[in-house]
Image (cartoon, rainbow, N blue to C red; front, side, top):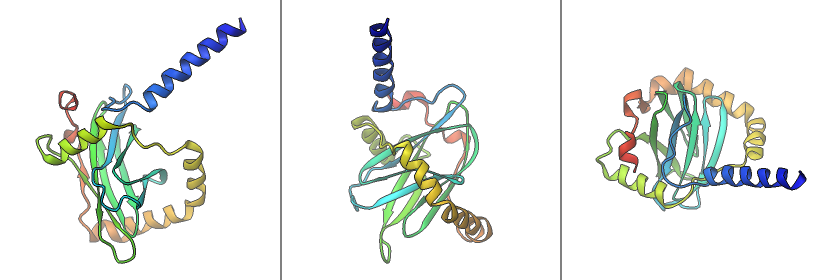
Amino acid sequence: MKTGKMLVFAMMTLLCCQSLFAQGFQPPAEGKAVVYFTRVSSYGYAVSFEYFHNDEYIGVFKGKNYMRYECEPGKHLFWASSENKEFIEADLAAGGTYIVMVNIEMGAWKARVGLSPITDKNTEEFTRAKDLIFSEPPSSTPQKKVDEMNVKLKDFIADKLKMYDEVWKSKYNYPVITQDMAIPAESMK
């Protein structure tokens, strides 16, 4: 009996780990949407960018890499932090897969981050993002670190969102993701 439980546990662990570290496009769970944050350039490989969804820290990665983030469909605010703060409003469709290019730009003290949605699958950007996604598993920030950073950055997050609402949203022309920007499943093969 104990051996059977151990075998089932081992098989479940293996299945969970396989999907966690799978490379290639993974469709969202039923009723969800997925956003891939892709950084296709090795330029500034040592510089980390932190990523947020609305008022929550969701992860960090550096260099040529990507992060897969699954969430509910509907309206969202995604943002990244470095020397600057870059925002992207999104209205995601259930079942939709979206790609956001993470660009590194020269800054005064450290690198600046840029976010731009891929809107056309017939571009070099899409090909580079697709090649990256198929070449390696996504970057994953351990849940323990995500939880710790949400506590540590609570005031920082509130301050930046207040600045976004009161100043930056009307001052800067941030990019937007609309439901029709979802990448068709046949393009992700």
